[in-house]
Image 1 (tube, rainbow, N blue to C red):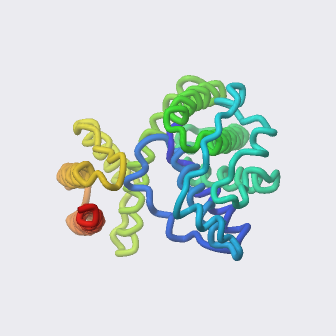
Image 2 (image 1 turned 180 degrees about the vertical axis):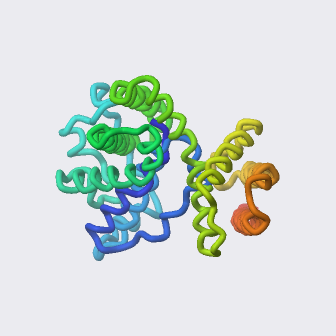
Image 3 (image 1 turned 135 degrees about the vertical axis):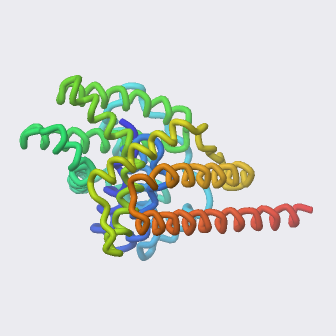
Length: 314
């Protein structure tokens, strides 16, 4: 499975368990919604869960770990991948910062699974309607998606810190997930569903624009949204892959990423002008300009930090 429907379940469960943290992580989808919906959700939500543990009273060790060392990598048994890890393996897996891991608790796992199912129900509501799935088949699909996301969260936890093993495991998980969905929906509907999954990053961005416009009493029609999504996907296919900096210190790659985003936004908005009203067009352009200015400010901060670090080394 790809990686965007898993964006908040673990964090939401952590919030319910600790009554601390959460609201600010909800809308960071634009730049990270590139690949697999499930793994994105798991990784991002786990970061929020880890932070909530660090914020608990008496969690000094956890806070120290967040600011310093990375826990030693642990190699799971081959039989534990790519499916659900062995229960004994899960029970003793390393926990970041020495804090609690909601995946280790049956109650926590069930809460997280329910949250994942609820998230998938919102994310795939349009797809389920278009596929004309009955109630039972829809519920079976949502249960399957939740199980797949939980399985990927388990695997991500076991392989944290081993990027090569993580990529290999995710490829196997994706293949297995696709086979499971194909068996449930049949080849034709599974193909349609896979295409919808592929468009999730663009749909997330269009929905963000639509929410902004709706607040200004400039609502987008459903057909406008679908056309906008198609335009975004077409433009992306016509551009080289967006640069991916390996570290925050790679300011040249970060600048290239910002430049790519600016070119992409311009190309999208130029084509979308044919499906938007002038008022909608002007507001989306202002949103894009603001987002770009935020990226530029972040880049400038990284450049200043790098310059300070270089001066100290001298």
